[in-house]
Amino acid sequence: MPDQEPAANNSLETGHSKGRYFMRFTPGQRYLHAVLFTTFLGLAATGLPMRFSESIWAREFATIVGGFGAIIFFHKLFAVVLTLAFLIHVRDLFTRAFIHREKGIFWGSTSMVANWKDAKDLFGHIRWFLGLGPKPQFERYAYWEKFDYWAVFWGMIVIGFSGYAMWFAPFFAKFLPGWALNAVLVIHSEEGLLAILFIFSIHFVNTHLRPDSFPMDMVVFTGVESEEEFKHKRTLEYERLKAQGKLEGRIADAPGSWQINFSKVVGFTAILIGLVLLVLTLSAYFRE
Ligand code: HEM
Image (cartoon, rainbow, N blue to C red; front, side, top):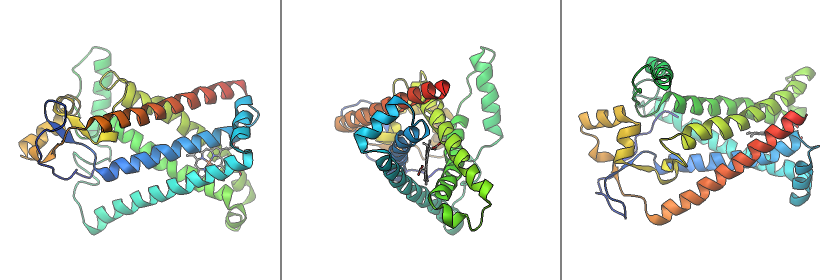
């Protein structure tokens, strides 16, 4: 997702916290993420029992929700909602890039497209981990955040296409040879497992479990982060906005207690479900 600069909000710090807060994600970006993670959890929770249908937990789960027919029904329901969210996102990108001709979508400091600095940051980070150099400083999106974004973007195309090819097999059979229809099942199944392993291990560790954010980074729920966090995690973006005189325009209200508590409940529930699904996937996979 190329960046959408959050709208200016010049209110000074409010709420219970001391210090200034800055807007990182717009409400639209937060809603998109909410739909993405709820449908993804739903797709993983319904896809895994189909994939490992011989496991005891898969059969127990099927009994609770009303059988494998119900599991397939819910899988398709979540898939349709996720597809709609993805199509809305792609439509927004096209509108911003080709109709509004917004600059910086494909290149530059706020773009999601990887650039030479990302490659240097990756190696710089490895050097820092080994104690051989200074810690790299990041712009609006670090290289691993761009990687997460594109992994989901292309994964969505592969999983979506193979999923619909299975769902509407008689229609796709008019264009695809028989072996391709068998291949889509393997592709969907393996890509689904890969996505589950990636999101519930690498994405969780990168975003929530690393020392800077442990036990959970709530910015995608509240939309805002403290000045200290902003300066520390995205130093180059902070300095760029300051030099451009745009920093004040990003000041936002501090999150209210209800917002923080709600984010904690939703976030921890999602992480917990994800980790349970990860353990079930790994144990079933290695027992196969
Ligand atoms: C647009 C998105 C998607 C569509 C249209 C879709 C559709 C389908 C369909 C039609 C099936 C076969 C159901 C049957 O046996 O009748 C299936 C199976 C499955 N799906 Fe999806 N799905 C989507 C996304 C996902 C995602 C995101 C995941 C992973 C998180 C996933 C994981 C799986 C798994 C593991 C299976 C079982 C495959 C097997 O039996 O080996 N799906 N999906």
